[in-house]
Length: 330
Image: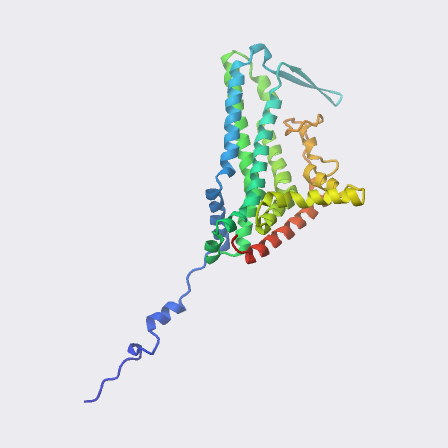
């Protein structure tokens, strides 16, 4: 009896056809933009203080404003008139000026997100080494570049936008409370609309957040991310210690203050556009609500310090990416 020929696929020594087909088939590759999107969502899932802290501050502001608006005497409600004579702007204020209260609300929310951004950047790359979750994330098809960029996107883009939205909503609620109090007391609301141009000043607020929190402070956020990727413990101390030590060393050895002036320049802004002057000629440390304030983005974009800072931010981020690639869990 002649044995029948066995098919080649039935030979145990030969590769199985289905196996060959499975190996040859490539899984669809997820676009990097989609991976970045989900990594950013992960950051908000794991760091709820990014939005809880400014929302809590905004809620306290609204509640405090509601209480003060109800309790304030009617004769102390503000009335501010603005007149222009021969190019000179004159403001006559009667009672309590709520513009300062609206300015203070914006400042408090921006301050809260500023500190949230500082502690987030310091913990972003440090915590994943501390809890050893970096081993899990490195096992996934996620590059160090995409991971670090997802964390840098939070203080550079999303927190300024979140701050703007929360501040606009908060000031709108404050305006509605003012209107309700005025109507309840039978007062004219014309002065309220005239002296509180919230729609116009929301654009000023957005410009302030993009110019300062996103662009001008970019090297600060990148430096904190670099320290977060490098430090083995207490990243806050390592972030503050080098510039502080350089300032002291320069003062003792050279009797100069170039480092301190550079740090002040980075925190306050370029000459002629000190960010404290955004608050008006009085220099009060709040955002300006004045409709006469002039926005000069061309002057800001022409500042050499802006582009030097962005170059430093790129260098710091590149170093953070390299450090994450070779760093081990703590």
